[in-house]
Length: 352
Image (cartoon, rainbow, N blue to C red):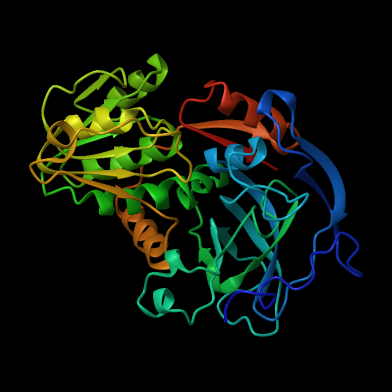
C-alpha cells in the first residue's frame, strides 16, 4: 500500500518537534470573493519513512483549488491547506528515502498517493485508484512555507528555470499532457482548445511542438491575444465555429454548455477530451449532430506518475513559454479571487 502515512508521517497542527509554518487553510467553503481561505500558523509535520519535508519556494494556483475553496468539490479534510503545484527544496528525508537528499529541488503534484495493489494500479492506471489521495485535498498542500510529501510521488526538477515557471507544469502541464493523449490527435492534426488558462496555454504549445494546427476558442480577449502570440492558427470566442473541422478538441473551461459546441466542431472520427475535475451540467446532446460519424466524448481523470515523467521529459526538449502572474504567498486569497473573476492570463503562482 502506498497510501496511508508512510510518506506523510504526522502533520497534526501540534506535532512535537515539527517546524512551525505559516499556511493558508480552507476555513469554510464560499465564493472566492468572500475569502474562504485563512492564514494560520501550524506545525509543518514530520516526514514518515517514505516522506520528504520541503521548504516551499513556489506553488501554482490551480482551478481545482478554486473548486475546493468554493465547494464545487466536497472537502476531504477539514481546514486543509490547498495547493498541488509545488516547487521546493528538500529539508529532511524519511528513513526509507533513497532518491532524494537535503537540498534537492523537488516538485509535488496533484496525485499524492495510491494503494498500489488494486486492479487499476496493477494495470498501470493508478489515476483511477479508488483509494487515491490528493495534494491539497487529502493532505496539506503548498499554500504554505513548508509541506510534507511522499517521495514516491515527487518529481526531480532541473536546476535553472525559475521556481514560478516550473510550478504550473506540475498540474496544469501534466493534466494537459494527459488530456492531449486522451484526445488522440493524429500527427499534423487540427486541435481545438476550449478555454485558455494555465493548462491550455501549456498544452497548446505542446501540440504545436508536435506539429499540430491549434485553434483556440475562449471568451477572454487577453487570452485570445496570448494564444496567437504562442502560435495558435486562430483564436475566437468560445461559442464560435473554428475555421476548420477539428480532428480533436480539449475542453479546459469548466462549462458543460461547451460540450455540444465542441462536439459539433469535430470532423468525422474526432475526439473531445474534457480535462477538468468539475464541469457544470451538460445540455442535452443530439445523436446526429454531436456523436454520429464516430465522434467520441472522453473524460480525463487525474494523472499517473508516468504521465508526469513523460511530460517533464518532453518539456525539457521543447521548453514552453510559461505566462506567469506572480503573487506573494501572503496574497493567496487575492490570487484565488482573481482566478475566479477571470483576471488571470496564463498561470497564477504564489512565490515565497
